[in-house]
Amino acid sequence: MVTTSNLMNIKLCSPRSINEALNFLSSPRHRPIAGGTDIIPGIRSGRLSVDALVDISFLDELRFIELFENKIQIGANTTFTELIESDLLEKTCKIIIETAKNVGAEQTRNRGTIGGNLGNASPAADLITTLLTLDANVVLISLKGKRSLPLERFLLGPGKTGIEPGELIHHIYFDTLRDNSKAIYLKVGKRRGMACALANLSLIISGNKEGYINKSYKVAIGAVAPTAIRCYKTEQILRTEASNEELINKSIKAICSECNPIDDIRATANYRKYVVGKLLKHALEKLWSSN
Image (cartoon, rainbow, N blue to C red; front, side):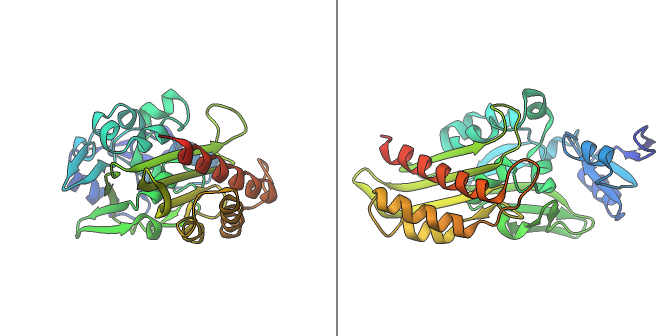
C-alpha cells in the first residue's frame, strides 16, 4: 500500500513483508524508516532528501534478541528500550544495556531502533562505539540475498555506510562476553541527560583475577573522528604491561594519537582529545579495581 505523507509531499510506503519492503527500496531515492528519530529531523532540516519513506516499523521479523551458537543476534527493528529490558542481554552482555541507557530520552529509546542507529552512522552514536568493542557484524538483506559486513567496514563516514541501493539492515550479531570479562561505557556531553557525546568510550577487558598483563583489551571511541573507531594501537600497549600509572600515561598518549577530532560549535578538537584521555584513565582504573 502507498499513501502520500504531509511531510514535504514525501510518499509513505507501508510494506506487509520484508520482500515487499525490499521491492520498494529498489528505487534509489526510497529510504526505510522505523522509529524516525534520526530520519525525520534530517528531512525537516533539509540534510536529507528522499522521494519516499518505506515504513518497516511493523515488520516483526526484524524485531528480536536471540542467542544462536554463542552469538547474540539483534534485529534491526529492536528498540533501545527493548535492549534495556532484555533478560538475555542482562545475562550475556550487560554492556549493551548500560550503553542503551545513555541514548537520548525515554521517548527516543522507546522509538529509536538499532537499525536506524547504525544506518544514521553518527560518529557520536553511543551504541556503535560499544558494538565496535564487541567485534559486531552487520547483516544486510536485498532481493539478491544476504551479506555480512564487519561493523568497521560498514562505517564509511558521517552518515555514510556500506549499505548498497536496495539493501536493508536485517540484524547484527556478536559473541557473548566471556565470564572473565569486564566492560564499561562512558561519555561526556554538554549536559547530564539527552546529550550528544562530545566524546565517548567503550572498554572491554578479559583476564583472570591475578591481573590483566597480556590479557585482551578492546577499546573504541566516538565523536572524535569521522566514524567511531577501534583503538588498536592503544590495545596493543595495554596488553603488554602490568596495570600501573605509567601504563595509563602511555595508553593516554596512544589513544590521543589515534583520534582525529574537529573543532565545532560544541567543543574544540584539543578538548575532545583531553576528554578521551580522561575517559580512558577513568575506565581503566574502574575496571582494574573492580572485583
